[in-house]
Length: 148
Image 1 (cartoon, helix red, strand yellow):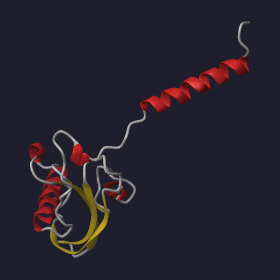
Image 2 (cartoon, rainbow, N blue to C red; image 1 turned 90 degrees about the vertical axis):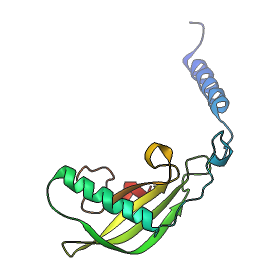
Image 3 (cartoon, rainbow, N blue to C red; image 1 turned 120 degrees about the horizontal axis):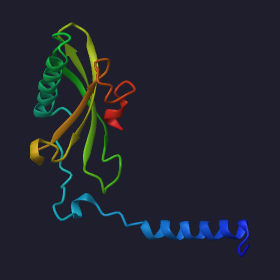
């Protein structure tokens, strides 16, 4: 045999480590892209964002067709983070709010506001999850996936 196993393993390790360095790239902020982002997002208690959460929640309830649960009011909106994943990702603001529902029970709603996440990239978009009402299990566990 021309090469021993340890020599072959060392050669493979060397090639993999060189290849990993070649794939590394410098971090470029999202603002420096050809069509850049400006990082200017609405606050967590913005009326338009909370209104979008209410209307989208109502649409989801209609889609699942199980009950007539609806959001009546919001209170105590707070920010959990801003651009948590770094400067080279699409800017997002992570929030939570206490929502009062028509059944009289308050529930926590976790959401993130996405720059240019609206319809066809116009305006901010929102992804949200009401704790205890995530029937599709889109953000498990307990909606924490919406603010990760």
